[in-house]
Length: 222
Length: 247
Image (cartoon, rainbow over all chains, first blue to last red; front, top):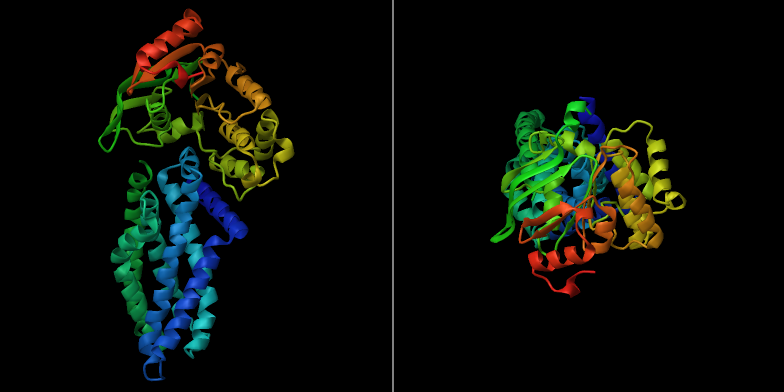
């Protein structure tokens, strides 16, 4: 187990260190997500009657579209200097590389979500304290990071990787995004029924946490 | 490493095939590298040298054929093979935003090395990079990056060193350090497989020479059994290149 966990966290440590130096991923995702929230606020002009219908969709559009930017950057970083080959020379399974990269993507997306939520709450007039959103955000973000890590590794080898990633990624994560939007809408309406979406997201995560590492080893070897 | 693993060959390749789309790069290549030897592979551009190196390091998946490293199939026991292989490629395999020290520390962690600091200091000293350890790799020249790249490959003291044109971009001082690395016989089982375009250097450093052309090994023999002139003739004959393509 230590042989698995230690290199996974070494990759995570390396990605965090790189991000603290370059700030490429968090800044670009954060700016994009904030822009989406602001633009939608002006475009839709939500009223007290419509805000709980519109706001959850806006929040998850901001998170998923912003997340795609970060996912693209995550593997571009490995591809550019041939660094992915450096990772592949280490005596660890390809699944270790997958989980290391996936945890980095997950962490960066959670940080961005934590930063954009206060802005979202202020602009759409919600309470800052909505603990119900935490499990939804964690489970849905885990889904996005798990699926996104495989597809970003795949897309980075294509010429039009910025286009290819969303084309591959969104059809697969649509169920998780729908569940996240519905659950978030329940939370924003003060409805406790959001918990019925959590098992769905958990099962989605469980399936892809098994399937994605297997697919990943075929993706990274040319 | 078990003593039994050191019997036989360091690297054994059988019928290796690899195509990129319709382009066949390796066409049933066979190769044997004994323990403790330095083997240089010569070949013109596009002959399959880099593809062979990447396949041996399990970076790319062959279409057909088998590769055994220390007697074990690398597809089945890849981690074991990677633990004893040090790889130098055209790319530095280093993160520009990190310092040389941070890069080496990261790889030391990935190889689960004990006494990380000692390993880092040792390889940095060996490649003459101690003074640059805390400089960001992105700010280094190509040659300096290459030195760190070689240091990275030596970090876990690999028994088998696989290098793709390791001399490219190195100055005379670094070339001398590289020669020391290649000719290091501290461990009698230390094996080096490298590619180069420099015939004279290849002959000077190697125990065995091979020429790859059109995806197969077309010549292989002891380096001291052939003169530089004779090898050049064979090179042009097998590889079908003009004298201007090599040094």
